[in-house]
Image 1 (tube, chains in turn green, brown):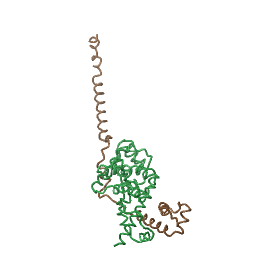
Image 2: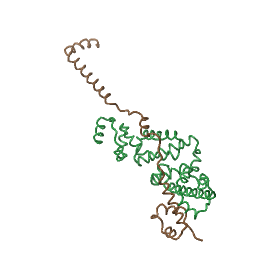
Image 3: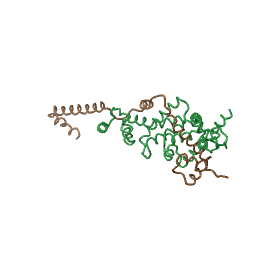
Image 4: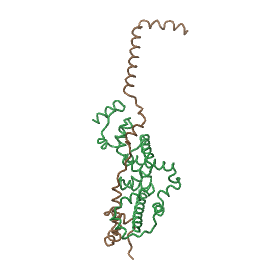
Amino acid sequence: MEICLNILQHFCNQPVEWQVSSNTGQNTTDHHLVERVLGGDTSAFGIIVNNTENLVTRIVFDAIHNESDRKDIAQDIYLKAYQKLPTFKFQSKLSTWIAQIGYNTCIDYLRKKKLVLPENKFEETEAGSENEMLDHLNIAQGISAGAADAVVIEKNISEILKTGISKLPVLYKTLITLYHNEELSYEEIGEVTGLPAGTVKSYLFRARKGLRNYLLHQYEKEDLW
Amino acid sequence: MVKHLTDDEVQQFALEKLNCEKGTLDHIQFCRECQAKAEGYRVMIADIKHRSQPALEFDLSAAVLHRLPLPQTKTTSDRGLIWLFILIGIGITGTTIYRFRGSFAYLFDGLTTILI
């Protein structure tokens, strides 16, 4: 059916009103979908949105706290993607490319709202030294570990961890999400965030260490009660 | 004093046991402290992976499609009308030529005199 649709579209050189099921869309290649969108078939862009929505939503939630801003930004990301689609050269996966637009849109928003420091300080603050991140998490350095690790294992850490992640700088949050939840490679995460793969790996180690320290710190606080 | 693994090495062990260096594996086999630390990381990472997927409270796809600019291509009715006008034009011209075919010779009779 889809082949017939494409032939018809090609022949008429115009969009044909036909809603392709999401199941079909999942199997359709990036190339094919992009060609359809560029040919004027906006329903194909709907499939692209559906395929990448989870990834983009995670990026938006990591960066933006305000619900109505999230709504606007999520839409803006896709409108930008639609406008820039003719420039997409298939040098990465379409989802990675859209995630990159998503991440940059969120960072631009934070800069405009002055929720992050200007450019020259941005890199240092977003992914600065380990000490800076520990400060971000409000925890002291040199936390005693050892037996505390075992307690962390036994306790239900989900809620504490959720709070810990929410306190991380946006870049670290995004790295954690893209690596552990979206299972992107270091290279793909590098494309999204504009960082070298080695830096991504190094920042991920730092982010996890910060989270562990946060968990241990929370454990110590609870112990005092 | 025992030299423990670095934090990165412990994380690496928790993440990808098989890709660790032999020295790391040898140490952790006998070091309870590093074992506990690695286990702590393993549990933490597992928990991160099980975070729920956040969801927007509206249909993103529908909202985006609603805001997309309309395609610039011409619609079927536009194309049909264009062809209809072309055919009508051809018809009128053809009929006119056929109807006045005998008069064409006289049309340009006086033209040479005017030009001279």
